[in-house]
Amino acid sequence: MAKLYLEGVIVCVGYDDFLAHTIAAAKAQLNKLVVVTDKKDRRTKLLCEYHHVECVQTDAFYENGDKFNKGKGINEGLKKLSKQGWVIQLDADIYLPPMTRFILEKISEELDPSTIYGIDRMMCPSYEEWQKFINSPRPIQEGWVYIHPTAFPIGVRIAEYMGKGYEPIGYFQMWNPMHSGVYEYPIEHGLADRTDVLHAKKFPRRKRQLLPELLCIHLDSEGLGVAQMGKNWNGDRKSVV
Image (cartoon, rainbow, N blue to C red; front, side, top):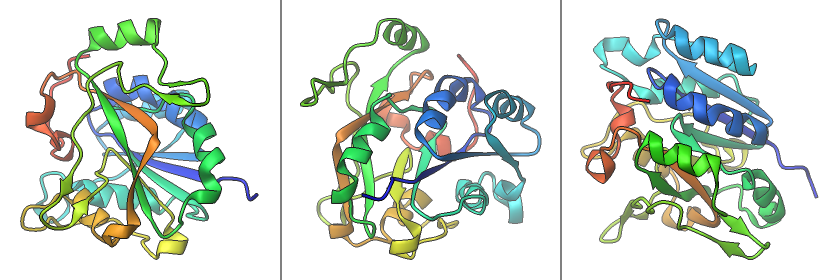
């Protein structure tokens, strides 16, 4: 069995307070991690230096008058990856539990390299709740059998069931560029689509799949919940952690 090769890209502009809680977990489970920020975000750069993670500083986000084009930032990160295996596009406020890579390795022979995969997220509502969890974590994967989606409420999925069906969205998207032929991220929105949805739609429905063995935790310390889905794509937020 070929060893699973995982690379990741995280865009983090003004989310260093969240990234401080997630970067070590991501780095531990990836062969390579690249964080992309803008040229003014010194705090993210210093955080990457501390964790010995490659940091790309670019103002591509703001080219051609864009307020914040996250897709262009993702592409700057993708340029730094070998893309010889699987790529995970991950949000800065997503925590990957310790069993994530182990489980992916166990099921790797069943993964289709022409498919894009997503996972469900549990929504941690506040910094206080996150501290309670991390100081006394409840099991997520247990006994090699059970998956516990119970620590926090499960976030919504995107599934256009009158149209295009399930779409893994941008907090966690895993695909194999070499086998799928998808090497770049979209940089323009559709009529009602964020670029992460457009990225998922590059794959036909049968090639868009959920990995039920995995869960991540979304650190939603702004308390905005479902009503503000996609807020990370705008690049405007208040630091509250």
